[in-house]
Length: 231
Image 1 (cartoon, rainbow, N blue to C red):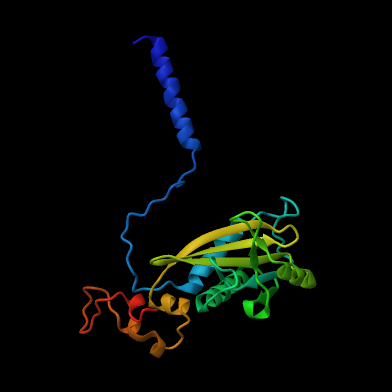
Image 2 (image 1 turned 90 degrees about the vertical axis):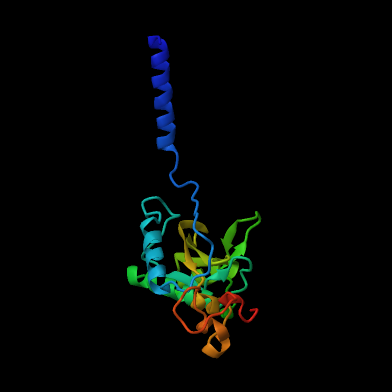
């Protein structure tokens, strides 16, 4: 092999390595685990606390400009809403909103302004383009009244065995996202009951008596617990 061919191969190898080094890691994440129902629920408080911590660590700093997060001004926190319908929430969404609020308050000393759907303040609306989410006019008006600098909004989407929660910290003045994070929680019996607004054991029915296959118990059910009462 000539020196020219050897040099060409070395250059090509270096080019490939350079491209691989510059490529974003985990651009495609695959999970080869089985899709199955969980008998264990997430710790909502701890999960929300860590999500807020990660989001704040990656928030645009004040040195960037006016479209950053101002830690000295109040923050509006709203209930988490259904991604498929911003006018709807559930006990899960209300609890998640509360957990995120506590997580924010424990890490930042901003004054918190709490709103929910019952007050008529829809936190986010669909933009002109599909997939574009903007703060609602009601929320912007409320922010101006209290001189709020940011709004913490969140959505959740229910999948077969998980709930995906997306949180966004939005600069109210510029209506731009300054930080965001997404996490997931397993759909265990408690999460399912919260999503279905079932508040008491008598409403939950068979789910509290369900045990996973193979569990050492005298009673078991052949149907998966979320569909025990066709709810």
